[in-house]
Amino acid sequence: MKKKMKKLKKQIKGITLIALVITIIVLLILAAVAINLTIGSNGIFTRTKDAVDRYELAAIEEKIKMEEVVGIIDSYIPGGTQGINYIKGIYAIENSEKEMKMDCIMELEGKLYRANLNVNRSENDMTVESATKMEKIEDIAMPLYIMLFNDENIGDIEVKVENEEEGYIIIRYKNTNYIITVEETEISNKASIDYYEGNIDQNPGEMEGDGTEGSPYLIQSIEDLVAFSERSLNYSFSGEYISLDTDLDFNSDESYVDPYTTVFGDINRNDIIEPLKTELTTGRGFFPIAYDGNGFMGSFNGNNYIIKNLYMNDVINQSNADISLMEAYPVIGFGLFSGLNDGEIKNLKVTGNITSSLEYVGGIVGDCVGDSVIENCVNEVNITAVGSSSVGGITGGREYESFTILDCKNYGNISIVQDDNIPEEIKIGGIIGCTDSGRINNCINYGTIKSISDGTNLYKGDIYGKLGANGEKCITNCENMGTLEVETVSGQNSFTTYIGGIIGILYYRPM
Image (cartoon, rainbow, N blue to C red; front, side, top):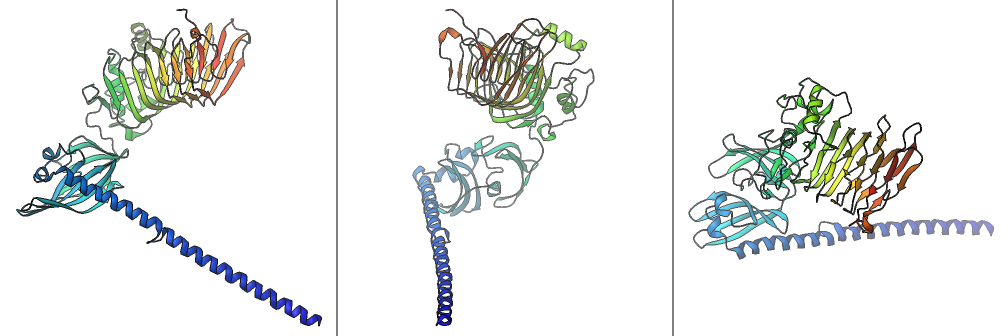
Protein backbone atom coordinates (compact mmCIF):
# COMPACT_ATOMS: atom_id res chain seq x y z
CA MET A 1 0.00 0.00 0.00
CA LYS A 2 2.83 2.38 0.91
CA LYS A 3 4.57 1.64 -2.38
CA LYS A 4 1.37 2.51 -4.31
CA MET A 5 1.03 5.78 -2.37
CA LYS A 6 4.64 6.79 -3.15
CA LYS A 7 4.15 5.96 -6.82
CA LEU A 8 0.91 8.01 -6.91
CA LYS A 9 2.67 11.00 -5.27
CA LYS A 10 5.44 10.86 -7.85
CA GLN A 11 2.87 10.77 -10.66
CA ILE A 12 1.04 13.77 -9.13
CA LYS A 13 4.32 15.70 -8.81
CA GLY A 14 5.18 14.92 -12.41
CA ILE A 15 1.76 16.05 -13.61
CA THR A 16 2.01 19.24 -11.49
CA LEU A 17 5.46 20.05 -12.93
CA ILE A 18 4.24 19.49 -16.49
CA ALA A 19 1.20 21.70 -15.80
CA LEU A 20 3.49 24.41 -14.41
CA VAL A 21 5.74 24.29 -17.48
CA ILE A 22 2.73 24.44 -19.79
CA THR A 23 1.34 27.38 -17.82
CA ILE A 24 4.66 29.26 -18.12
CA ILE A 25 4.81 28.58 -21.87
CA VAL A 26 1.24 29.82 -22.30
CA LEU A 27 2.03 32.97 -20.32
CA LEU A 28 5.13 33.61 -22.44
CA ILE A 29 3.10 33.19 -25.62
CA LEU A 30 0.45 35.58 -24.31
CA ALA A 31 3.18 38.08 -23.32
CA ALA A 32 4.74 37.86 -26.78
CA VAL A 33 1.36 38.42 -28.36
CA ALA A 34 0.76 41.42 -26.09
CA ILE A 35 4.17 42.89 -26.89
CA ASN A 36 3.62 42.39 -30.61
CA LEU A 37 0.20 44.03 -30.35
CA THR A 38 1.83 46.96 -28.57
CA ILE A 39 5.11 47.55 -30.42
CA GLY A 40 5.07 45.19 -33.40
CA SER A 41 4.92 46.25 -37.03
CA ASN A 42 1.17 46.63 -36.67
CA GLY A 43 1.16 47.29 -32.92
CA ILE A 44 -0.49 50.04 -30.94
CA PHE A 45 2.69 52.13 -30.74
CA THR A 46 3.41 51.70 -34.43
CA ARG A 47 -0.16 52.54 -35.43
CA THR A 48 -0.09 55.58 -33.13
CA LYS A 49 3.21 56.77 -34.63
CA ASP A 50 1.89 56.21 -38.16
CA ALA A 51 -1.21 58.22 -37.30
CA VAL A 52 0.92 61.07 -35.96
CA ASP A 53 3.14 60.97 -39.07
CA ARG A 54 0.08 60.98 -41.35
CA TYR A 55 -1.32 63.95 -39.43
CA GLU A 56 1.98 65.85 -39.71
CA LEU A 57 2.38 65.17 -43.42
CA ALA A 58 -1.24 66.09 -44.07
CA ALA A 59 -0.59 69.34 -42.23
CA ILE A 60 2.31 70.07 -44.57
CA GLU A 61 0.15 69.50 -47.65
CA GLU A 62 -2.59 71.70 -46.21
CA LYS A 63 -0.04 74.39 -45.38
CA ILE A 64 1.22 74.41 -48.97
CA LYS A 65 -2.26 74.67 -50.45
CA MET A 66 -3.32 77.29 -47.94
CA GLU A 67 -0.43 79.62 -48.83
CA GLU A 68 -1.02 79.33 -52.61
CA VAL A 69 2.64 79.35 -53.49
CA VAL A 70 2.42 77.81 -56.95
CA GLY A 71 3.24 81.00 -58.79
CA ILE A 72 6.33 81.71 -56.70
CA ILE A 73 7.61 78.15 -56.68
CA ASP A 74 7.17 78.08 -60.46
CA SER A 75 10.45 79.97 -60.77
CA TYR A 76 12.03 77.96 -57.90
CA ILE A 77 14.87 80.39 -57.31
CA PRO A 78 15.93 81.53 -53.80
CA GLY A 79 14.92 85.15 -54.44
CA GLY A 80 11.46 83.96 -55.43
CA THR A 81 10.84 82.04 -52.22
CA GLN A 82 11.98 84.57 -49.65
CA GLY A 83 8.42 85.50 -48.79
CA ILE A 84 7.56 81.93 -47.76
CA ASN A 85 9.07 81.49 -44.34
CA TYR A 86 8.32 77.78 -44.04
CA ILE A 87 10.10 76.83 -47.29
CA LYS A 88 13.81 76.57 -46.53
CA GLY A 89 15.28 75.17 -49.72
CA ILE A 90 14.02 73.96 -53.08
CA TYR A 91 15.24 72.50 -56.35
CA ALA A 92 13.71 71.00 -59.50
CA ILE A 93 14.03 67.30 -60.24
CA GLU A 94 12.19 67.44 -63.57
CA ASN A 95 11.17 70.57 -65.38
CA SER A 96 8.99 70.78 -68.51
CA GLU A 97 6.29 73.03 -69.97
CA LYS A 98 3.52 70.90 -68.47
CA GLU A 99 4.97 69.57 -65.25
CA MET A 100 7.63 70.25 -62.66
CA LYS A 101 8.70 67.89 -59.90
CA MET A 102 10.57 69.37 -56.97
CA ASP A 103 12.17 68.51 -53.66
CA CYS A 104 11.67 71.02 -50.92
CA ILE A 105 12.91 71.45 -47.35
CA MET A 106 10.10 72.75 -45.19
CA GLU A 107 9.66 73.71 -41.56
CA LEU A 108 6.44 73.15 -39.68
CA GLU A 109 6.06 73.72 -35.94
CA GLY A 110 9.81 73.59 -35.43
CA LYS A 111 10.36 70.31 -37.32
CA LEU A 112 12.12 69.91 -40.67
CA TYR A 113 10.64 67.88 -43.52
CA ARG A 114 11.62 66.96 -47.06
CA ALA A 115 8.58 67.12 -49.31
CA ASN A 116 8.36 65.85 -52.90
CA LEU A 117 6.15 68.29 -54.80
CA ASN A 118 4.46 67.88 -58.17
CA VAL A 119 3.26 71.01 -60.02
CA ASN A 120 0.85 70.72 -62.94
CA ARG A 121 1.56 73.88 -64.92
CA SER A 122 -1.48 73.66 -67.23
CA GLU A 123 -3.99 73.31 -64.38
CA ASN A 124 -2.03 75.48 -61.93
CA ASP A 125 -2.28 72.72 -59.34
CA MET A 126 0.23 71.33 -56.88
CA THR A 127 0.24 68.09 -54.90
CA VAL A 128 2.54 66.57 -52.31
CA GLU A 129 3.56 63.14 -53.52
CA SER A 130 5.40 62.26 -50.32
CA ALA A 131 7.02 63.85 -47.29
CA THR A 132 9.48 62.57 -44.75
CA LYS A 133 10.76 64.03 -41.48
CA MET A 134 14.48 64.73 -41.57
CA GLU A 135 16.49 63.46 -38.61
CA LYS A 136 20.14 63.52 -39.67
CA ILE A 137 22.54 65.35 -41.90
CA GLU A 138 22.49 62.67 -44.61
CA ASP A 139 18.81 63.45 -45.14
CA ILE A 140 19.68 66.96 -46.29
CA ALA A 141 22.17 66.36 -49.08
CA MET A 142 20.55 67.89 -52.12
CA PRO A 143 18.16 70.77 -51.38
CA LEU A 144 20.70 72.50 -49.17
CA TYR A 145 23.68 73.17 -51.40
CA ILE A 146 23.11 75.99 -53.89
CA MET A 147 19.42 76.76 -53.69
CA LEU A 148 19.31 77.60 -49.98
CA PHE A 149 18.87 81.15 -48.86
CA ASN A 150 22.33 82.37 -47.99
CA ASP A 151 23.42 82.61 -44.35
CA GLU A 152 20.15 81.54 -42.76
CA ASN A 153 19.78 79.20 -39.81
CA ILE A 154 17.55 76.25 -40.61
CA GLY A 155 16.65 74.42 -37.44
CA ASP A 156 19.87 72.71 -36.36
CA ILE A 157 21.52 73.51 -39.71
CA GLU A 158 23.72 76.53 -40.32
CA VAL A 159 25.11 77.41 -43.74
CA LYS A 160 28.53 78.82 -42.93
CA VAL A 161 30.53 78.94 -46.16
CA GLU A 162 29.39 78.85 -49.76
CA ASN A 163 31.62 78.54 -52.78
CA GLU A 164 29.67 77.82 -55.94
CA GLU A 165 32.70 78.21 -58.20
CA GLU A 166 34.60 75.48 -56.37
CA GLY A 167 31.47 73.34 -56.17
CA TYR A 168 31.19 72.86 -52.43
CA ILE A 169 29.49 74.25 -49.35
CA ILE A 170 30.47 73.80 -45.70
CA ILE A 171 27.58 73.59 -43.25
CA ARG A 172 27.20 73.00 -39.53
CA TYR A 173 24.62 70.56 -38.23
CA LYS A 174 24.18 70.36 -34.46
CA ASN A 175 27.58 72.02 -33.97
CA THR A 176 29.35 69.52 -36.26
CA ASN A 177 30.83 70.67 -39.56
CA TYR A 178 30.17 68.92 -42.88
CA ILE A 179 31.28 69.63 -46.43
CA ILE A 180 28.88 69.14 -49.34
CA THR A 181 30.42 68.62 -52.78
CA VAL A 182 28.11 69.43 -55.68
CA GLU A 183 27.94 67.84 -59.12
CA GLU A 184 25.68 69.62 -61.60
CA THR A 185 23.56 67.68 -64.10
CA GLU A 186 21.05 68.72 -66.76
CA ILE A 187 17.97 68.71 -64.57
CA SER A 188 19.29 68.92 -61.03
CA ASN A 189 22.31 68.83 -58.79
CA LYS A 190 23.71 65.81 -57.01
CA ALA A 191 25.75 66.07 -53.86
CA SER A 192 27.98 64.01 -51.64
CA ILE A 193 28.52 64.83 -47.98
CA ASP A 194 31.42 64.20 -45.62
CA TYR A 195 32.54 65.25 -42.16
CA TYR A 196 34.69 68.37 -42.25
CA GLU A 197 37.42 68.58 -39.59
CA GLY A 198 38.75 72.08 -40.19
CA ASN A 199 37.60 75.37 -38.71
CA ILE A 200 35.24 77.20 -41.05
CA ASP A 201 36.25 80.78 -40.31
CA GLN A 202 37.24 82.26 -43.69
CA ASN A 203 38.64 85.49 -42.20
CA PRO A 204 40.50 84.52 -39.02
CA GLY A 205 41.28 87.49 -36.82
CA GLU A 206 38.52 89.57 -38.42
CA MET A 207 35.17 89.43 -36.66
CA GLU A 208 32.44 89.28 -39.28
CA GLY A 209 29.24 91.28 -38.77
CA ASP A 210 28.33 94.89 -38.15
CA GLY A 211 28.15 94.87 -34.35
CA THR A 212 24.40 95.46 -34.36
CA GLU A 213 21.83 93.31 -32.62
CA GLY A 214 20.67 91.92 -35.96
CA SER A 215 24.21 91.45 -37.27
CA PRO A 216 26.56 91.02 -34.29
CA TYR A 217 30.32 90.63 -34.54
CA LEU A 218 30.92 86.87 -34.83
CA ILE A 219 33.66 84.96 -33.04
CA GLN A 220 34.22 81.82 -35.10
CA SER A 221 37.77 80.82 -34.15
CA ILE A 222 40.47 81.31 -31.52
CA GLU A 223 41.97 83.92 -33.86
CA ASP A 224 38.73 85.92 -33.69
CA LEU A 225 38.73 85.72 -29.88
CA VAL A 226 42.32 86.98 -29.75
CA ALA A 227 41.45 89.80 -32.15
CA PHE A 228 38.47 90.69 -29.92
CA SER A 229 40.79 90.86 -26.92
CA GLU A 230 43.33 93.01 -28.76
CA ARG A 231 40.71 95.42 -30.09
CA SER A 232 39.13 95.80 -26.65
CA LEU A 233 42.40 97.22 -25.33
CA ASN A 234 41.46 100.60 -26.81
CA TYR A 235 37.76 100.14 -27.57
CA SER A 236 34.84 99.58 -25.17
CA PHE A 237 32.28 98.18 -27.71
CA SER A 238 29.69 100.43 -26.06
CA GLY A 239 26.21 99.62 -27.39
CA GLU A 240 27.58 96.93 -29.73
CA TYR A 241 26.90 93.19 -29.91
CA ILE A 242 29.34 90.28 -30.02
CA SER A 243 28.25 86.68 -30.56
CA LEU A 244 30.20 83.45 -29.98
CA ASP A 245 29.49 81.24 -32.99
CA THR A 246 30.99 77.90 -31.95
CA ASP A 247 32.72 76.02 -29.13
CA LEU A 248 36.36 77.04 -28.77
CA ASP A 249 39.06 74.87 -27.18
CA PHE A 250 42.48 76.44 -26.61
CA ASN A 251 44.04 72.95 -26.56
CA SER A 252 42.48 71.75 -29.83
CA ASP A 253 43.93 72.50 -33.28
CA GLU A 254 40.39 72.39 -34.71
CA SER A 255 39.45 75.59 -32.86
CA TYR A 256 42.19 77.47 -34.74
CA VAL A 257 42.31 78.22 -38.44
CA ASP A 258 46.11 78.08 -38.12
CA PRO A 259 47.45 77.10 -34.67
CA TYR A 260 50.99 77.84 -35.87
CA THR A 261 50.48 81.42 -37.01
CA THR A 262 52.69 84.07 -35.40
CA VAL A 263 50.87 87.17 -36.66
CA PHE A 264 49.56 88.00 -33.18
CA GLY A 265 53.04 88.37 -31.71
CA ASP A 266 54.14 87.75 -28.12
CA ILE A 267 50.78 87.28 -26.38
CA ASN A 268 52.16 85.35 -23.40
CA ARG A 269 54.81 88.02 -22.69
CA ASN A 270 57.84 85.72 -22.57
CA ASP A 271 59.77 87.86 -25.06
CA ILE A 272 59.60 85.08 -27.67
CA ILE A 273 57.21 85.00 -30.60
CA GLU A 274 55.87 81.45 -30.73
CA PRO A 275 53.02 79.66 -32.56
CA LEU A 276 49.62 81.01 -31.50
CA LYS A 277 48.56 77.82 -29.70
CA THR A 278 51.80 77.85 -27.68
CA GLU A 279 51.37 81.54 -26.87
CA LEU A 280 47.88 80.93 -25.47
CA THR A 281 48.67 77.83 -23.40
CA THR A 282 52.00 78.76 -21.79
CA GLY A 283 53.53 81.73 -19.97
CA ARG A 284 50.85 84.31 -19.26
CA GLY A 285 48.48 82.67 -21.72
CA PHE A 286 45.38 84.42 -23.04
CA PHE A 287 45.27 88.18 -22.61
CA PRO A 288 42.05 89.37 -20.84
CA ILE A 289 39.29 91.08 -22.78
CA ALA A 290 38.74 94.77 -21.90
CA TYR A 291 42.06 95.13 -20.06
CA ASP A 292 42.22 98.90 -20.54
CA GLY A 293 40.58 99.71 -17.19
CA ASN A 294 37.34 101.03 -18.72
CA GLY A 295 35.65 97.65 -18.91
CA PHE A 296 33.56 96.00 -21.62
CA MET A 297 30.44 98.07 -22.32
CA GLY A 298 28.75 96.00 -25.01
CA SER A 299 26.63 92.84 -25.10
CA PHE A 300 28.38 89.45 -25.38
CA ASN A 301 26.21 86.42 -26.17
CA GLY A 302 27.89 83.03 -25.78
CA ASN A 303 24.87 81.28 -27.35
CA ASN A 304 25.43 78.42 -24.86
CA TYR A 305 28.75 77.54 -26.49
CA ILE A 306 31.83 76.74 -24.39
CA ILE A 307 35.26 78.34 -24.19
CA LYS A 308 37.38 75.40 -23.05
CA ASN A 309 40.81 75.17 -21.41
CA LEU A 310 41.25 78.90 -20.87
CA TYR A 311 44.72 79.50 -19.43
CA MET A 312 45.62 82.83 -17.82
CA ASN A 313 48.44 83.58 -15.38
CA ASP A 314 49.68 86.97 -14.30
CA VAL A 315 51.72 85.67 -11.36
CA ILE A 316 55.09 85.25 -13.12
CA ASN A 317 58.18 87.39 -13.42
CA GLN A 318 57.29 90.66 -15.07
CA SER A 319 59.05 91.58 -18.28
CA ASN A 320 59.66 95.12 -19.46
CA ALA A 321 56.65 94.76 -21.73
CA ASP A 322 54.45 93.89 -18.74
CA ILE A 323 55.67 96.84 -16.70
CA SER A 324 55.03 99.31 -19.53
CA LEU A 325 51.60 97.76 -20.15
CA MET A 326 50.62 98.06 -16.49
CA GLU A 327 51.76 101.68 -16.46
CA ALA A 328 49.63 102.39 -19.51
CA TYR A 329 46.58 100.46 -18.22
CA PRO A 330 46.50 100.35 -14.39
CA VAL A 331 43.73 97.73 -14.18
CA ILE A 332 42.52 95.92 -11.08
CA GLY A 333 40.44 93.10 -12.63
CA PHE A 334 41.45 89.71 -14.02
CA GLY A 335 39.28 87.08 -15.72
CA LEU A 336 38.15 86.15 -19.24
CA PHE A 337 36.87 89.74 -19.19
CA SER A 338 39.11 91.98 -17.13
CA GLY A 339 36.22 94.36 -16.48
CA LEU A 340 32.51 94.83 -17.22
CA ASN A 341 31.07 98.35 -17.11
CA ASP A 342 27.33 98.74 -17.81
CA GLY A 343 27.76 95.78 -20.17
CA GLU A 344 26.14 92.37 -20.54
CA ILE A 345 27.51 88.83 -20.74
CA LYS A 346 25.09 85.93 -21.16
CA ASN A 347 24.75 82.27 -22.18
CA LEU A 348 28.42 81.41 -21.75
CA LYS A 349 30.37 78.53 -20.22
CA VAL A 350 34.10 78.69 -19.52
CA THR A 351 36.54 76.00 -18.33
CA GLY A 352 40.25 76.17 -17.55
CA ASN A 353 42.64 77.71 -15.01
CA ILE A 354 43.30 81.29 -13.88
CA THR A 355 46.05 82.48 -11.54
CA SER A 356 46.17 86.15 -10.58
CA SER A 357 47.45 88.67 -8.05
CA LEU A 358 45.15 91.51 -9.13
CA GLU A 359 42.56 92.90 -6.75
CA TYR A 360 39.35 91.56 -8.35
CA VAL A 361 39.43 88.08 -9.90
CA GLY A 362 36.63 85.99 -11.44
CA GLY A 363 36.18 83.17 -13.93
CA ILE A 364 33.93 85.22 -16.23
CA VAL A 365 34.65 88.82 -15.12
CA GLY A 366 37.26 90.25 -12.80
CA ASP A 367 36.07 93.79 -12.00
CA CYS A 368 32.29 94.38 -12.36
CA VAL A 369 30.78 97.87 -12.06
CA GLY A 370 27.74 99.94 -12.99
CA ASP A 371 24.48 98.41 -14.18
CA SER A 372 26.22 95.37 -15.63
CA VAL A 373 24.38 92.07 -16.09
CA ILE A 374 25.85 88.55 -16.11
CA GLU A 375 23.16 86.01 -16.97
CA ASN A 376 23.02 82.25 -17.55
CA CYS A 377 26.78 81.77 -17.30
CA VAL A 378 28.65 78.72 -15.99
CA ASN A 379 32.18 78.84 -14.62
CA GLU A 380 34.32 75.72 -14.48
CA VAL A 381 37.58 77.66 -14.28
CA ASN A 382 39.71 76.84 -11.25
CA ILE A 383 40.95 80.11 -9.72
CA THR A 384 44.11 80.63 -7.68
CA ALA A 385 44.38 84.12 -6.20
CA VAL A 386 47.68 85.35 -4.77
CA GLY A 387 47.27 88.49 -2.69
CA SER A 388 43.88 89.33 -4.24
CA SER A 389 41.24 90.99 -2.10
CA SER A 390 38.01 89.98 -3.87
CA VAL A 391 37.49 86.70 -5.72
CA GLY A 392 34.37 85.01 -7.10
CA GLY A 393 33.63 82.10 -9.42
CA ILE A 394 31.58 84.33 -11.72
CA THR A 395 33.05 87.74 -10.81
CA GLY A 396 35.25 89.35 -8.20
CA GLY A 397 32.68 92.17 -8.12
CA ARG A 398 33.47 95.56 -6.63
CA GLU A 399 32.62 97.42 -3.40
CA TYR A 400 29.63 99.76 -3.53
CA GLU A 401 28.49 98.59 -6.97
CA SER A 402 25.03 97.22 -7.79
CA PHE A 403 25.30 94.93 -10.81
CA THR A 404 23.03 91.94 -11.52
CA ILE A 405 23.90 88.22 -11.59
CA LEU A 406 21.13 85.88 -12.79
CA ASP A 407 20.91 82.09 -13.28
CA CYS A 408 24.64 81.47 -12.93
CA LYS A 409 26.52 78.43 -11.65
CA ASN A 410 30.04 77.92 -10.40
CA TYR A 411 31.77 74.54 -10.47
CA GLY A 412 35.31 75.88 -10.30
CA ASN A 413 37.46 75.57 -7.20
CA ILE A 414 38.69 78.83 -5.70
CA SER A 415 41.85 79.11 -3.59
CA ILE A 416 43.44 82.04 -1.80
CA VAL A 417 47.20 81.51 -1.61
CA GLN A 418 49.25 83.07 1.19
CA ASP A 419 52.02 85.48 0.25
CA ASP A 420 53.83 88.46 1.78
CA ASN A 421 51.21 90.93 0.60
CA ILE A 422 47.98 89.77 2.20
CA PRO A 423 45.40 92.58 1.86
CA GLU A 424 43.56 94.02 4.84
CA GLU A 425 40.38 92.27 3.73
CA ILE A 426 39.87 89.09 1.75
CA LYS A 427 36.40 88.60 0.19
CA ILE A 428 35.75 85.28 -1.49
CA GLY A 429 32.49 83.76 -2.76
CA GLY A 430 31.41 80.96 -5.07
CA ILE A 431 29.53 83.44 -7.27
CA ILE A 432 30.73 86.95 -6.25
CA GLY A 433 33.51 88.31 -4.07
CA CYS A 434 31.72 91.51 -3.03
CA THR A 435 28.99 93.96 -4.05
CA ASP A 436 26.74 96.63 -2.57
CA SER A 437 23.05 96.00 -3.25
CA GLY A 438 23.13 94.23 -6.59
CA ARG A 439 20.69 91.44 -7.46
CA ILE A 440 21.97 87.87 -7.19
CA ASN A 441 19.13 85.53 -8.24
CA ASN A 442 18.91 81.80 -8.99
CA CYS A 443 22.61 81.12 -8.54
CA ILE A 444 24.29 77.94 -7.26
CA ASN A 445 27.85 77.23 -6.16
CA TYR A 446 29.18 73.67 -6.44
CA GLY A 447 32.88 74.50 -6.15
CA THR A 448 35.22 74.17 -3.19
CA ILE A 449 36.35 77.47 -1.68
CA LYS A 450 39.63 77.56 0.24
CA SER A 451 40.57 80.73 2.05
CA ILE A 452 42.92 81.89 4.80
CA SER A 453 42.34 83.76 8.05
CA ASP A 454 44.49 85.13 10.86
CA GLY A 455 42.14 83.36 13.22
CA THR A 456 40.46 86.48 14.60
CA ASN A 457 38.44 88.38 11.99
CA LEU A 458 36.61 85.64 10.11
CA TYR A 459 33.11 85.92 8.61
CA LYS A 460 32.02 82.59 7.22
CA GLY A 461 28.54 81.80 5.91
CA ASP A 462 26.80 79.36 3.60
CA ILE A 463 25.37 82.10 1.37
CA TYR A 464 27.24 85.25 2.39
CA GLY A 465 30.00 86.31 4.74
CA LYS A 466 28.47 89.59 5.96
CA LEU A 467 25.08 91.14 5.22
CA GLY A 468 24.60 94.84 4.59
CA ALA A 469 22.93 96.45 1.58
CA ASN A 470 20.54 98.61 3.57
CA GLY A 471 18.56 95.52 4.54
CA GLU A 472 17.29 94.97 1.00
CA LYS A 473 16.55 91.46 -0.26
CA CYS A 474 19.05 91.32 -3.08
CA ILE A 475 19.99 87.61 -2.79
CA THR A 476 17.09 85.35 -3.79
CA ASN A 477 16.77 81.66 -4.59
CA CYS A 478 20.50 80.99 -4.25
CA GLU A 479 22.14 77.85 -2.90
CA ASN A 480 25.59 76.64 -1.93
CA MET A 481 26.30 72.98 -2.68
CA GLY A 482 30.06 73.36 -2.38
CA THR A 483 32.55 73.19 0.48
CA LEU A 484 34.00 76.10 2.48
CA GLU A 485 37.46 75.59 3.94
CA VAL A 486 39.49 78.08 5.99
CA GLU A 487 43.17 77.78 6.88
CA THR A 488 44.40 79.71 9.91
CA VAL A 489 47.76 81.43 9.47
CA SER A 490 49.95 83.09 12.07
CA GLY A 491 52.80 85.59 12.06
CA GLN A 492 50.94 87.92 9.68
CA ASN A 493 49.50 91.39 10.06
CA SER A 494 45.89 91.44 11.17
CA PHE A 495 43.43 91.02 8.31
CA THR A 496 39.75 90.16 7.89
CA THR A 497 38.39 87.25 5.88
CA TYR A 498 34.85 87.12 4.49
CA ILE A 499 33.94 83.79 2.91
CA GLY A 500 30.57 82.64 1.57
CA GLY A 501 29.26 79.98 -0.77
CA ILE A 502 27.49 82.61 -2.91
CA ILE A 503 29.05 85.95 -1.92
CA GLY A 504 31.94 86.96 0.30
CA ILE A 505 30.61 90.31 1.52
CA LEU A 506 27.53 92.45 0.82
CA TYR A 507 28.34 96.03 1.74
CA TYR A 508 26.03 98.46 3.51
CA ARG A 509 25.71 101.88 1.93
CA PRO A 510 23.48 104.46 3.67
CA MET A 511 20.98 106.12 1.34
